[in-house]
Length: 467
Image (cartoon, rainbow, N blue to C red; front, side):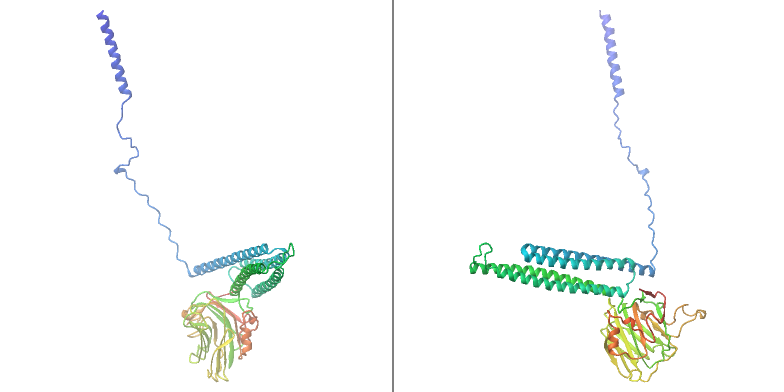
């Protein structure tokens, strides 16, 4: 019996040992760190070099000028959009005030006031919309320069009509409301339902309350109309600055101060005269101690005629700086944003030299070059003076071919110039005042020695004619 059980026990024990060994082989625990993304010290990647940024080339002077023109056009469009938004908001506010006023004071009087208010709002809104559309249309067609003066005068006339229409409608509305309120005040002491007389104290208090509310409503309406009038005046002033003055249809643009930028004038008649008057419109960008506008001279004396600008003054010389006429307070320091009209007149017989600004005599000096006669054969320039010899020839090798020698960039003019005319006589005070009217047609009154738009004028360097 024992002999049979012993082999069975051995077999069972062997089976258990085999199972234990098989289990350990299948479930071997791996205690290694499973960090497969770890970067060792020897495998540290090198940083990728980034390409150097491209260096843009330096902008030239002309590139800067074009950028300035683009920026000025962008600011102009922003101002137009701002003016459009302001007018829309004010018109909406005015309409809301009128509607609230009509809701408070209904009936026949309210209907009349509403009709007048709508007529006023429609008239002003239609006129302003038409004016703004004209502005935008003109900006799209002529983006880089001013437009013709005829259209400018037409737009200014339209704005003046809008201002007068606003004043007329305000007056009519005030009269209508006054009549309506007087009728309401006259019927305030009667009961509309029973026809009985109200108590004297109650009727008086009710009338005082009505008058107080009516005064407040009227004050609000008048304040809104006055604000609209002020904004229309600002639009009118801005339109005057955008266009050329005195009916001129073109101007000379001097983009910067340079000895190469000037304009030569070739008159058809000799300048050997004993009296003259020279007039022009200028809009300087900046001025120095001595900025040349008009200069005439020859080899013997390069300073026969000079019309100059200082920091805050205008200067006029005949035959040299010894005969100087100066007027202070004519120019704003650093330049101006508006057109300035200047005239210089001189007579050899009386020796009287006078300087005019904006059509008014601002300075006069007697005994200036008395008995002197301007020499013939000189050269006439705008925006520069000749302080040396006459023009240099390209073959001589001196100077710059195509330009004048002896020009100083510190005295060069930068800005706009138009309406340059010269007469062989001294104009009267009435004639100068007519030529100096900014809303007039002074450019059509041309001189008999130098006539704007008729006499040949040759721009040099970056000077150019603009419309």
